[in-house]
Amino acid sequence: MPAPLTTKPSEPAQVDAYLARLQHPLAEVVAALRQAILAADRTIGEEIKWNAPAFFYTGPLAPFKPKEFKRHLVVFNLYRKDCLRLVFWHGAAADDGSGFLEGEYPDGRRLASFTSLKDVRAKQAKLRQTLKRQLKALPK
Image (cartoon, rainbow, N blue to C red; front, side):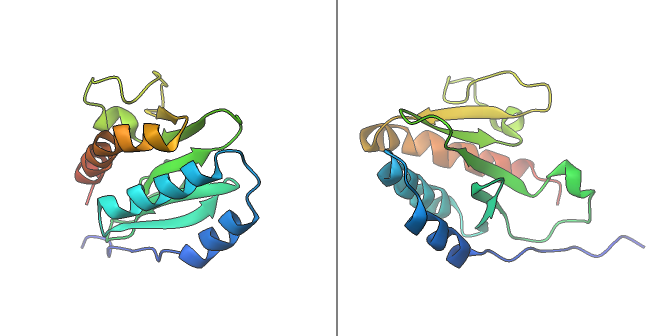
């Protein structure tokens, strides 16, 4: 008998509170990226993980080991002040070779960088396509 599927609730109030306290020169870019990520698909939820906004698939998945992070899609890296990075947990499975995703990490992570609202607008379609490919690649 297969294990029952599990879901995970989104926590937007947690992210709202985090963003209200955020002191970062690119806070507007963070807010714009958050909206773009959530608008990409209704099954994307949000939370604060690793001290940053993180986004995950909220729908049913078979149980898995927590350290596999199968449900996770993308998390902000806010370390730099001149650039925001999005870390795509399973980005290798969603990389279309266009150069939108950067890096070659053995665990499958890939990065996308944003420096301004103009940059978000220019890359929004690639962001949406990447998220859709990640969702399609999930083991459901």
